[in-house]
Image 1 (cartoon, rainbow, N blue to C red):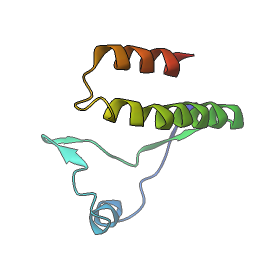
Image 2: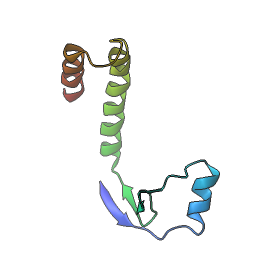
Image 3: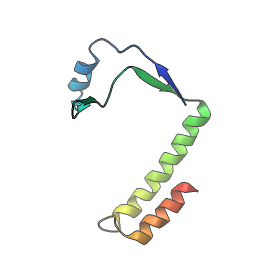
Image 4: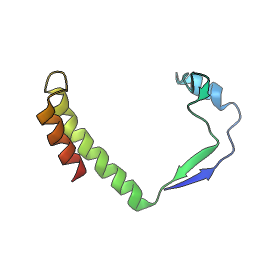
Length: 83
């Protein structure tokens, strides 16, 4: 993954607000800016997609424990994600 400098689009704040994303500044600091973007290789995208699929598969396990705090379930899920 490479971080690349970018020129912010004119009116980007208004575009975000139109989409309902009005928290790009939190506690006086920019949370979202358009001064940079990230470039990924195809292999990196594949890796991100695989990790996302694993997370999506274990989310029901977290929510099925009631409050999501069942330690055994959380440890099992962490092992699943890391493999």
